[in-house]
Every structure is written in structure tokens, then in C-alpha cells.
Image 1 (tube, rainbow, N blue to C red):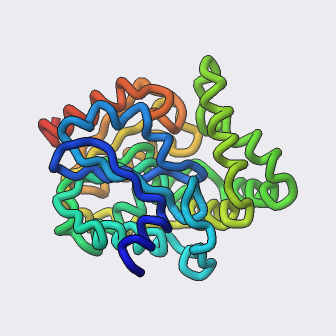
Image 2 (image 1 turned 135 degrees about the horizontal axis):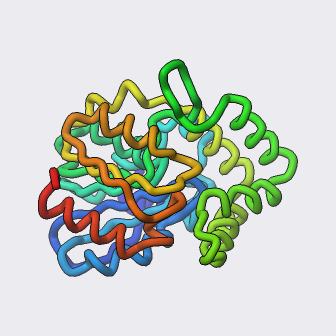
Image 3 (image 1 turned 180 degrees about the vertical axis):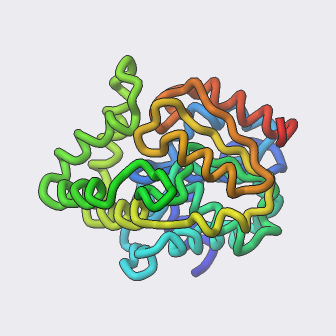
Length: 270
């Protein structure tokens, strides 16, 4: 694909006037607009690259390929293609939720591209296993997918407030629900299956970049045990438990999110 085709495919947008690269990758069911409270704090020092995964936001939905996106690696290849056509290097990568693992796979495949990694609410495996607490049973997730199949709007109405929490800010859950409903249900359902049934636990030890793991309080999607597991497996990582509640602190608690990122950039092992 040409540079312009990839820019159009992923609706790539740029912010900031710095020379250092900050690449922001949104979570499941979201889009690049979810970063809008974060980017202004870094526009002076960074060139910020924003994009939408195929099937999300204002991406080119016609570029969706079931086979390619039936595994997280398909999204990882998109991420690496973006880096290639834009000639990005020395990248500060910030990934929310499932994008943490998508970014991790990219950093393992091409480690020279990335200087630092920041994972917000990461999970290497969502399903409970022997000696591993992922937060969900197999049945939990199968029932969630069944609801998506039978009542997509009901699923969105149920999941959005569960993910967002922060009942004092109902507009955030409404925004997330609207984001869910603006996507193609078939694509979103497949992305959910790929996200929730993935297992990247064995990949984590291969991450060599300094990594900040931001763990929210009262996170129904990625509980404390999950974040601590990711931290334990990545040798050069820093774990920070946030006061922020829910699973989307860049929306609900942008000030704390910005502060933790800024501290990490100054001193990665703070």
C-alpha cells in the first residue's frame, strides 16, 4: 500500500510541533478522539501521531479483512506499517487496554523503532487460568459475545458504564456507548473476540524497552492482579497504581494520567 492509502486506511492525524515522536493507540471500541484531553500537554515537545484501527472511528471500513484481523498480529502489522510509511523512529508508544499488547508485539518484532512504552490498563490474558487471575471466566466472555450477537445495543448499554465507571460523569459512559454503536457490529464483535481470547503472557518477557504500567483503581476489565502480572513479566518496567477509577483514565482523570506520563519521561524508573 502507498503512504496515502495507509494514511487514509487508519485516518492518521498529527498534533504538536516537537521533533520527538509520540504514537497513541486507542483501545477496543474506541477511536483516536479519546486522547483529546491528553495531547495538549505534549504538543509543545512532541510530534503526536494519532490513528484509528480499521473498523473504528473514521478509518476505511472497506479495508477490513476478516483473516488479517482474526488475531492481534493483524493490528500489529497495521501499526508497523504506519511507522514504516511515516518513517517514525525513537517512538514513545502509549497504548490503552488491548493496544498495550498490540504495541508490545510491535516492539518485540521491531525493537529499534521504540524508545519507551506506556501501557494504560494492560492485560496479557483476560481469562482466568491455573495460577493466573485474568478477571473473567471463559463462560463470562462467551456470554458477553452472545449478548453482542443477540442484542448489540443492549450490550453497548451494559458494557460502557462497566468499563468507564465514574458514575458522577455519566457523559463519559454515554460517549463510550456511542462509540461502540458507531462501529460495524460484525467488526466490533470480531475485535472483541480477538481481544478477550488472546493470550500474550509469554510475549511480555521479550519486551526490552523501559515500560510504564498504569493501573487504575476499581478496574472491571483489567484488575490489579493483571497489571501486577504484566509488571512482573517485563523486567524493565515501572508499575503505578492510579487514584483514577474505571478503565479509561485518559478520559476520566486526564490530569493524573498526564502527570504520571510526564514523570516517566523524565525518570523511567521513578
